[in-house]
Amino acid sequence: MSETETSTVLSILRERFDAILDGWISTQSDEGVQRTDLFSHKEGREQTSSLLRAMITGIAEGDTGSRFDLSSEPWTELRTVLVDVTQERSARGVSPSDMASFVLALKGPIFFQLQELLADQAGELVEEIFFISRVIDAFAVYCTEVFIAERDRIIEQQRDQMQELSTPVVELWDKVLTLPLIGTMDSARAQEVMENLLETILQRQSEVVIVDLTGVQTVDTQVAQHMLRMASAVRLMGAECIISGISPTIAQTMVQLGVDVGEVTTRSTIRTGLADALNRVGYEIVHKAKQ
Amino acid sequence: MSAASAIYFVEGVLLVAIQEDISDTDILDLQEALAERIVRDSARAVVMDINALEIVDTFVGRILAQLASVSKLLDAQTYVVGMRPAVAMTLVELGMDLPESKTALSLSHALQDLRGKPLA
Image 1 (spheres, rainbow over the protein chains, first blue to last red):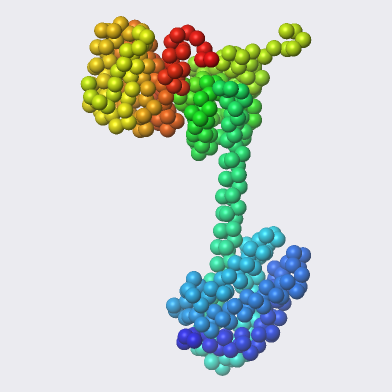
Image 2: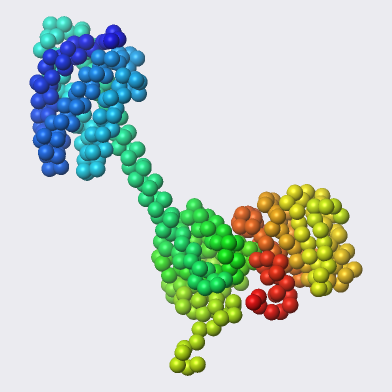
């Protein structure tokens, strides 16, 4: 056991564990961060007491003084418990500020206990309060970090999913590919879509590509630029590009923006685009009855 | 002529194969040799296979464009074939989309186009 600046706190936590635990829980409930709507009293109590036990281990073995470092070895157990509790709570919809208040609610009961014990030793009282306060603050900050990391992970995951969803290149017929664009196009997405498309042209030896804009809500200069670049790259690869699904509104916007599509073929619907594409590779769609 | 590129004359068409490690001097030599050959063989087209080319810069892009323009002046249509996706994207980024040359997926696609028949 290392020398500790918070020895009184440690003894309080050990000897008056239940009193502190009750105090912590009632402070949580006073501050309205107990969230009994999301957790039963039992669960809340279990989480709180496991935190408190891990904290005792941390204080007993770790350094709480000037060299306090939450990321050091003795605090491993506490960090694990904090991560578990935070993830559990965030999954059930507890906000980061509620989570921080939940941890910070521990200060009250500890301070009162300290005050009782060290009533006549003002110097020591201040010192203990100062150090333990810093430790508990670090817990709260750590919880917030866990929260943010969790959110980042979700955002990352959703972005990946969106990327996957947003770049399907479909082979409609021999030598005919289609790329239905959906949603908004930013530079990163445009790049990804283009790479995907060109690779597929190479693999399938496709001669015609239909880029369908039916699912694109708005076209601005940037989107138009990306489309034209894509068309140029497709041409350089040796295939042809047809842009379909240009709605009347989009056509007007493009003209107003002064976008010149140059030699790129444009079609109003994917239907006419497909007929044109099949025609170029030597197929024709014929109605059976009219044969 | 260096070993970094080779010119063949087939069916009135000059076939040019560019190697992966073509240097700036090689490509300048190629430009000169190609112009000579177009006139000497009275070629009707030039098909340039750049499939081996993995990296392009503005210099190579400019020479490719110049080759097409020179051929056009000498009455030969240029085809650039077998371009890799990364090369296509780079050329577009650089704003060099080779307006003077036709493009095709592969050598055989270009030859089919020259024979005026769709590929079976």
